[in-house]
Image 1: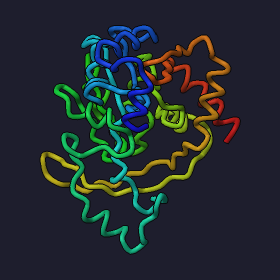
Image 2: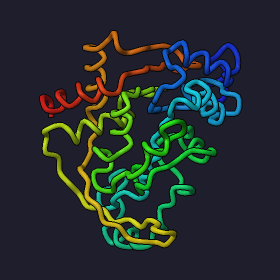
Image 3: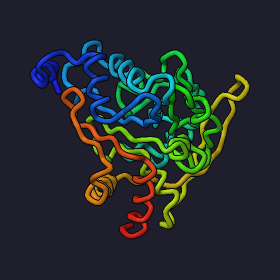
Length: 270
């Protein structure tokens, strides 16, 4: 969306206060635990861009709640399976060997949007230790949700996704569809679908010093997430809150119900 399109998409500037009103109207409340997936451009013309969105989300859940976002850094994933585009085979060892250490405080996000990139640098935001699929969190349970994020099976049972599940949190899709819904990855681990596994090597910091870690993970697949999400919404229509946040179509979904449904759907359809 161009800036002109963003202006034309709304009747007045999108501000912190207008976003908070929209989020509360959607069903978000103080004290909630919420995992946010967002598209800044979908919101229309936002005064001060991503910072305004982060401030509004924090104001909506308050410090009594917990705000979680994916802060993935795909540049630390396995270069041997990169496909869009692939890198030459003779580059792979160099990439693995020469990548600087993943640093939770400074490593930029990749492919998750400008709102999480802004969010990760806020005061009192904690970011997990996983080099490629980290999450950041703020609020009452922030530190515990991202603590001890396992390297192996990084979107599975010892991930912040499971931490949100354990706290009966919600998923907020803000101008994005289920293709961006990382909670569906948790279902991939729980479903009896026998996915392929792959190894990765990355450099992280341990006690402030670079250290190489080797970890194993499943090969995740988002190609059917949109279909899966639509099937959930068809069957659980009453549990999905829909509305507009700025100019964006937004949905607020109970994460446990979504993940539990997805486990069965994946076992049936994959």
